[in-house]
Amino acid sequence: MNLVFLGPPGVGKGTQAVQVARALGLAHVATGDILRAAIRAGTKTGLEAKTHMDAGKLVPDDVVNRLVRERLAEKDTENGVVFDGYPRTRAQARALDLALAAAERKVTGVFDFQASDEIVVNRISGRRTCGKCQSAYHVSFAPSKKGEQCEKCGGALVQRSDDLPETVLQRLEVYRKDTAGVSDYYRKSGNYAAIDANRPIDVIAADLLTRIKKQS
Ligand code: ADP
Ligand code: AMP
Image 1 (cartoon, helix red, strand yellow):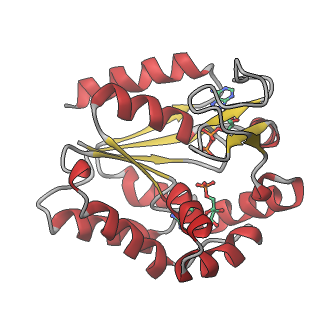
Image 2 (cartoon, protein in one colour):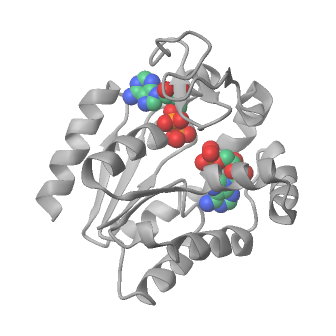
Protein backbone atom coordinates (compact mmCIF):
# COMPACT_ATOMS: atom_id res chain seq x y z
CA MET A 1 0.00 0.00 0.00
CA ASN A 2 1.56 3.32 -1.08
CA LEU A 3 -0.59 6.34 -0.30
CA VAL A 4 -0.11 9.96 -1.41
CA PHE A 5 -1.52 12.82 0.70
CA LEU A 6 -1.92 15.98 -1.39
CA GLY A 7 -3.14 19.44 -0.41
CA PRO A 8 -2.01 22.95 0.52
CA PRO A 9 0.43 23.61 3.36
CA GLY A 10 -1.31 23.56 6.73
CA VAL A 11 -4.38 21.63 5.56
CA GLY A 12 -3.65 18.74 7.96
CA LYS A 13 -1.79 16.19 5.82
CA GLY A 14 0.93 15.49 8.37
CA THR A 15 -1.52 15.13 11.26
CA GLN A 16 -3.45 12.48 9.33
CA ALA A 17 -0.36 10.82 7.84
CA VAL A 18 1.01 10.09 11.32
CA GLN A 19 -2.29 8.48 12.40
CA VAL A 20 -2.83 6.46 9.22
CA ALA A 21 0.78 5.24 9.13
CA ARG A 22 0.55 4.11 12.76
CA ALA A 23 -2.83 2.40 12.28
CA LEU A 24 -1.74 0.51 9.16
CA GLY A 25 1.94 -0.13 9.93
CA LEU A 26 3.18 2.02 7.03
CA ALA A 27 6.27 4.24 6.90
CA HIS A 28 5.55 7.99 7.04
CA VAL A 29 7.66 9.80 4.45
CA ALA A 30 7.31 13.58 4.76
CA THR A 31 9.76 15.43 2.52
CA GLY A 32 9.44 18.58 4.67
CA ASP A 33 10.59 16.58 7.73
CA ILE A 34 13.47 15.01 5.77
CA LEU A 35 14.60 18.46 4.57
CA ARG A 36 14.37 19.98 8.06
CA ALA A 37 16.44 17.05 9.41
CA ALA A 38 19.07 17.77 6.73
CA ILE A 39 19.12 21.43 7.80
CA ARG A 40 19.58 20.47 11.46
CA ALA A 41 22.37 18.07 10.49
CA GLY A 42 24.07 20.88 8.53
CA THR A 43 24.51 18.80 5.37
CA LYS A 44 25.17 20.34 1.93
CA THR A 45 21.64 19.34 0.88
CA GLY A 46 20.24 20.97 4.02
CA LEU A 47 22.09 24.22 3.38
CA GLU A 48 20.84 24.36 -0.22
CA ALA A 49 17.28 23.49 0.80
CA LYS A 50 17.16 26.13 3.54
CA THR A 51 17.36 29.10 1.17
CA HIS A 52 14.35 27.82 -0.80
CA MET A 53 12.35 26.88 2.30
CA ASP A 54 12.94 30.20 4.07
CA ALA A 55 11.70 31.96 0.94
CA GLY A 56 8.54 29.81 0.87
CA LYS A 57 9.64 28.27 -2.44
CA LEU A 58 9.95 24.64 -3.50
CA VAL A 59 13.26 22.84 -3.15
CA PRO A 60 14.40 21.74 -6.65
CA ASP A 61 12.86 18.49 -7.94
CA ASP A 62 16.19 16.67 -8.38
CA VAL A 63 17.12 17.25 -4.73
CA VAL A 64 13.76 16.10 -3.35
CA ASN A 65 13.52 13.13 -5.73
CA ARG A 66 16.97 11.94 -4.67
CA LEU A 67 16.03 12.17 -0.97
CA VAL A 68 12.88 10.13 -1.61
CA ARG A 69 14.77 7.48 -3.59
CA GLU A 70 17.25 7.19 -0.70
CA ARG A 71 14.41 6.92 1.81
CA LEU A 72 12.71 4.21 -0.27
CA ALA A 73 15.89 2.13 -0.06
CA GLU A 74 15.31 1.81 3.70
CA LYS A 75 13.77 -1.43 4.92
CA ASP A 76 10.83 0.03 6.85
CA THR A 77 9.30 1.34 3.60
CA GLU A 78 8.85 -2.19 2.23
CA ASN A 79 5.49 -2.63 4.00
CA GLY A 80 4.19 0.51 2.28
CA VAL A 81 4.40 4.25 2.68
CA VAL A 82 2.29 7.31 3.35
CA PHE A 83 3.85 10.12 1.27
CA ASP A 84 3.14 13.48 2.90
CA GLY A 85 3.97 16.69 1.04
CA TYR A 86 5.41 14.73 -1.88
CA PRO A 87 4.96 14.86 -4.85
CA ARG A 88 4.55 18.63 -5.15
CA THR A 89 5.14 18.94 -8.92
CA ARG A 90 4.20 16.78 -11.91
CA ALA A 91 7.90 15.99 -12.42
CA GLN A 92 8.01 14.66 -8.84
CA ALA A 93 4.86 12.58 -9.49
CA ARG A 94 6.54 10.99 -12.52
CA ALA A 95 9.73 10.41 -10.51
CA LEU A 96 7.73 8.72 -7.74
CA ASP A 97 6.04 6.40 -10.25
CA LEU A 98 9.46 5.43 -11.63
CA ALA A 99 11.03 4.93 -8.18
CA LEU A 100 8.15 2.69 -7.08
CA ALA A 101 8.07 0.80 -10.39
CA ALA A 102 11.76 -0.07 -9.91
CA ALA A 103 10.64 -2.03 -6.83
CA GLU A 104 7.55 -3.40 -8.63
CA ARG A 105 5.30 -1.14 -6.59
CA LYS A 106 2.89 1.65 -7.39
CA VAL A 107 0.78 4.39 -5.85
CA THR A 108 -2.36 2.66 -4.57
CA GLY A 109 -4.33 5.59 -3.14
CA VAL A 110 -4.30 9.38 -3.47
CA PHE A 111 -6.09 11.61 -0.95
CA ASP A 112 -6.38 15.28 -1.88
CA PHE A 113 -7.10 17.36 1.24
CA GLN A 114 -9.22 20.41 0.51
CA ALA A 115 -10.00 23.45 2.70
CA SER A 116 -10.41 27.19 2.20
CA ASP A 117 -7.42 29.56 2.40
CA GLU A 118 -8.92 31.01 5.57
CA ILE A 119 -8.90 27.65 7.34
CA VAL A 120 -5.43 26.80 6.10
CA VAL A 121 -3.98 30.15 7.25
CA ASN A 122 -5.65 29.71 10.66
CA ARG A 123 -4.17 26.25 11.03
CA ILE A 124 -0.67 27.29 9.96
CA SER A 125 -0.56 30.38 12.14
CA GLY A 126 -1.47 28.34 15.25
CA ARG A 127 0.81 25.40 14.42
CA ARG A 128 3.52 24.63 16.94
CA THR A 129 6.10 21.96 16.18
CA CYS A 130 8.30 19.97 18.53
CA GLY A 131 11.89 21.03 17.95
CA LYS A 132 13.04 17.51 18.84
CA CYS A 133 10.62 14.95 17.30
CA GLN A 134 8.72 17.24 14.86
CA SER A 135 5.25 16.35 16.20
CA ALA A 136 2.69 19.02 15.26
CA TYR A 137 0.31 20.73 17.67
CA HIS A 138 -2.10 23.64 17.36
CA VAL A 139 -2.51 26.31 20.02
CA SER A 140 -6.34 26.05 19.83
CA PHE A 141 -7.31 22.90 17.87
CA ALA A 142 -4.70 20.39 19.11
CA PRO A 143 -2.88 21.84 22.14
CA SER A 144 -0.21 19.85 23.96
CA LYS A 145 -1.37 18.55 27.34
CA LYS A 146 2.08 19.62 28.58
CA GLY A 147 1.69 23.28 27.58
CA GLU A 148 4.80 24.48 25.77
CA GLN A 149 6.33 21.00 25.78
CA CYS A 150 5.81 18.02 23.47
CA GLU A 151 3.55 15.33 24.94
CA LYS A 152 5.60 12.58 23.31
CA CYS A 153 9.21 13.55 24.02
CA GLY A 154 9.16 16.64 26.26
CA GLY A 155 10.88 18.78 23.57
CA ALA A 156 10.15 22.51 23.38
CA LEU A 157 7.35 23.55 21.00
CA VAL A 158 8.36 26.21 18.49
CA GLN A 159 6.83 28.02 15.54
CA ARG A 160 8.42 26.98 12.24
CA SER A 161 10.20 29.94 10.62
CA ASP A 162 8.29 29.32 7.37
CA ASP A 163 4.96 29.44 9.28
CA LEU A 164 5.29 33.21 9.79
CA PRO A 165 2.60 35.20 7.88
CA GLU A 166 4.67 36.60 4.99
CA THR A 167 6.11 33.17 4.08
CA VAL A 168 2.72 31.46 4.40
CA LEU A 169 1.19 33.61 1.63
CA GLN A 170 4.14 32.81 -0.64
CA ARG A 171 3.75 29.07 0.08
CA LEU A 172 0.05 29.20 -0.80
CA GLU A 173 0.93 30.96 -4.06
CA VAL A 174 3.49 28.25 -4.87
CA TYR A 175 0.88 25.60 -4.07
CA ARG A 176 -1.55 27.12 -6.56
CA LYS A 177 1.09 27.57 -9.26
CA ASP A 178 3.08 24.32 -9.01
CA THR A 179 1.31 21.77 -6.82
CA ALA A 180 -2.44 22.05 -7.48
CA GLY A 181 -1.82 20.54 -10.95
CA VAL A 182 -0.53 17.33 -9.36
CA SER A 183 -4.17 16.50 -8.56
CA ASP A 184 -4.85 16.30 -12.32
CA TYR A 185 -1.95 13.86 -12.68
CA TYR A 186 -3.73 11.45 -10.34
CA ARG A 187 -7.40 12.35 -10.85
CA LYS A 188 -7.93 9.95 -13.73
CA SER A 189 -6.17 7.06 -12.00
CA GLY A 190 -9.27 5.64 -10.30
CA ASN A 191 -7.70 5.63 -6.84
CA TYR A 192 -8.00 9.39 -6.28
CA ALA A 193 -10.33 10.88 -3.65
CA ALA A 194 -10.92 14.48 -2.60
CA ILE A 195 -11.08 14.78 1.19
CA ASP A 196 -13.10 17.46 2.97
CA ALA A 197 -10.44 18.71 5.39
CA ASN A 198 -12.81 21.20 7.08
CA ARG A 199 -13.78 18.55 9.63
CA PRO A 200 -12.31 17.68 13.04
CA ILE A 201 -9.10 15.62 13.12
CA ASP A 202 -10.73 12.40 14.41
CA VAL A 203 -13.57 12.52 11.88
CA ILE A 204 -11.13 12.85 8.97
CA ALA A 205 -8.95 10.04 10.33
CA ALA A 206 -11.93 7.67 10.57
CA ASP A 207 -13.08 8.61 7.05
CA LEU A 208 -9.59 7.98 5.62
CA LEU A 209 -9.26 4.58 7.25
CA THR A 210 -12.68 3.52 5.96
CA ARG A 211 -11.79 4.60 2.44
CA ILE A 212 -8.36 2.93 2.52
CA LYS A 213 -9.85 -0.35 3.79
CA LYS A 214 -12.46 -0.28 1.00
CA GLN A 215 -9.71 0.25 -1.60
CA SER A 216 -7.56 -2.67 -0.44
P1 ADP B 1 0.26 19.95 6.80
O1 ADP B 1 1.03 18.70 7.09
O2 ADP B 1 -0.78 19.77 5.72
O3 ADP B 1 1.13 21.15 6.55
P2 ADP B 1 -0.44 19.78 9.63
O4 ADP B 1 -0.91 18.38 9.76
O5 ADP B 1 0.88 20.14 10.21
O6 ADP B 1 -0.58 20.29 8.10
O7 ADP B 1 -1.58 20.70 10.31
C1 ADP B 1 -1.45 22.12 10.36
C2 ADP B 1 -1.96 22.61 11.71
O8 ADP B 1 -3.38 22.43 11.79
C3 ADP B 1 -1.37 21.89 12.92
O9 ADP B 1 -1.19 22.84 13.93
C4 ADP B 1 -2.44 20.85 13.28
O10 ADP B 1 -2.43 20.57 14.68
C5 ADP B 1 -3.72 21.56 12.87
N1 ADP B 1 -4.75 20.66 12.30
C6 ADP B 1 -4.55 19.60 11.49
N2 ADP B 1 -5.74 19.04 11.13
C7 ADP B 1 -6.70 19.79 11.72
C8 ADP B 1 -8.15 19.73 11.74
N3 ADP B 1 -8.80 18.78 11.05
N4 ADP B 1 -8.80 20.64 12.46
C9 ADP B 1 -8.13 21.61 13.15
N5 ADP B 1 -6.79 21.72 13.18
C10 ADP B 1 -6.08 20.82 12.48
P1 AMP C 1 6.15 21.03 4.54
O1 AMP C 1 6.79 20.55 5.80
O2 AMP C 1 5.55 19.92 3.72
O3 AMP C 1 5.18 22.17 4.79
O4 AMP C 1 7.32 21.62 3.64
C1 AMP C 1 8.09 22.73 4.08
C2 AMP C 1 8.94 23.25 2.92
O5 AMP C 1 9.86 22.24 2.51
C3 AMP C 1 8.17 23.63 1.65
O6 AMP C 1 7.66 24.94 1.70
C4 AMP C 1 9.28 23.48 0.60
O7 AMP C 1 10.19 24.58 0.63
C5 AMP C 1 10.04 22.25 1.11
N1 AMP C 1 9.47 21.00 0.55
C6 AMP C 1 8.85 20.00 1.25
N2 AMP C 1 8.47 19.02 0.42
C7 AMP C 1 8.84 19.40 -0.83
C8 AMP C 1 8.69 18.83 -2.12
N3 AMP C 1 8.06 17.64 -2.30
N4 AMP C 1 9.18 19.52 -3.17
C9 AMP C 1 9.81 20.69 -3.02
N5 AMP C 1 9.97 21.31 -1.84
C10 AMP C 1 9.49 20.67 -0.74
